[in-house]
Image (cartoon, rainbow, N blue to C red; front, side, top):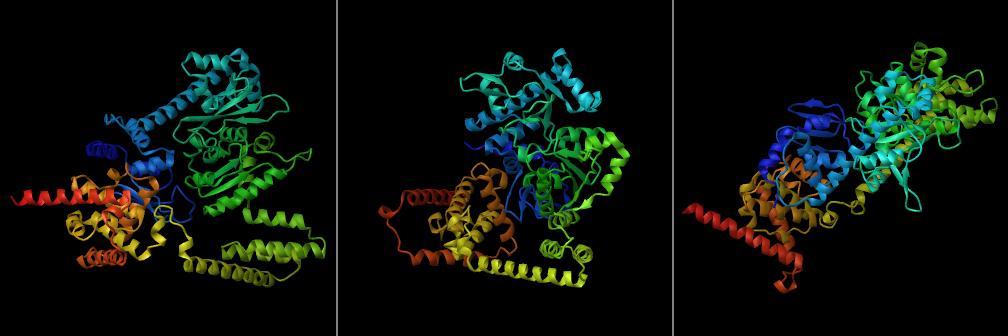
Length: 602
């Protein structure tokens, strides 16, 4: 049976959707409602709307939509019942015993168990750091400049060698298979389990809600193995979706984030007073991490290593951050006496916090960084080098959208290449026109070839565009005026809807309304996927732009009836099993409505 409406209403009241969204970004008032940058796709202007009357959301950019349960499904990667249980657990509301959702309950318990294992492991590592076995690790951390307050603040610990960790966790009731699933143990070819982390300084990775989700182990000696060993991805940890120290940096008052490659750099900068510092987690910056940064800052300073790999990571990060509408700046460290470039940690040790703060203020823009890189690669001491640099820099500058920035950097390029700035700007403008014409052609091809754009939610829509539009109008009418159901059913049944998804939705609304059940967003979530819920919200919102008149309803019905007549009518023996079941269900719904009307007249 379905979850009780009373329970869902309590759940909705206890889990405010605006509060849920606010942890993912800044909300801006729009009348009685809110708008924000969508958490589910890259965008520069807010297109995600949170509606407060009947709490739900819809993004006009990517089509995601639903209620707080759908939001939890999407952000936590949970099925419907697991998301409900999570919200119920957070708000202290007991789950109704409905005899269903065992798989969801199992998955939620699995995730909870993983969180508990990570929390227990973090405590074990912290205790080890304070023991005799952690003496060398503690000396390493202090030698790197970390003080005791910082070590406690970040929960830094030590992973000893041997099986002490495994035995300790087993004694707490955690099975080896559970610990392996949490990436805390590894199983070798013989089947034996051993710790993932050995003789390493342990940095817990904590998400923005304060949960330990993974670990990063830093080598403490001069060995040749990897400097960092990081947790593998698990049910609670996706490295490309999290940032080290985001649990602290999210509270900064600064509008700028400093992005480092290593954990210790982030920790040291935080200790020095730069609480706006985060580090990537063993991978190049990802689109999801860039979106995460966007929620907490307006621009980012990239403090990556100055080697080839660091430069490559910097270029990728610049492009991702620009795509998110953020300003990207590059921190270029001066070289030391040995010719090696400083990292943030070593620079602060050499010159102090104030000097580093001045260095941050002088960071160059992403454009200057890219142009300097192109200039160095081409070499402008020769005519050929200048010609190559001019060609590459014009191509790059054509991608810059800001007119003023193009003018400024065009002047610098002109001076370097001994040409006029107007000549550079003309060349850039020509490139931009060519690019614009290419984009226009692509848009025209897309408009003229809609059939090639597959609708993942309702694949039949491209085959029946006119009928699908009529279907949406009828469905929206039912949401707006459920009392019109009997009128609609006198003319149509679900088998008259040629598209699969709209047919399923129409049938669900018929059955629910005939039983006197709710058809609001929260009640439908158990029967539709998050993608389908987004489509339902789109139908409700976009179709509401047109007045709900009888003429509009009649017109939509006539379109479907005309389509019905154009196809030969099937006998019962010719119907597919699906069509036969829909026919029976509709007949049942109609009979229930007729019986209600007869009782009403008596």
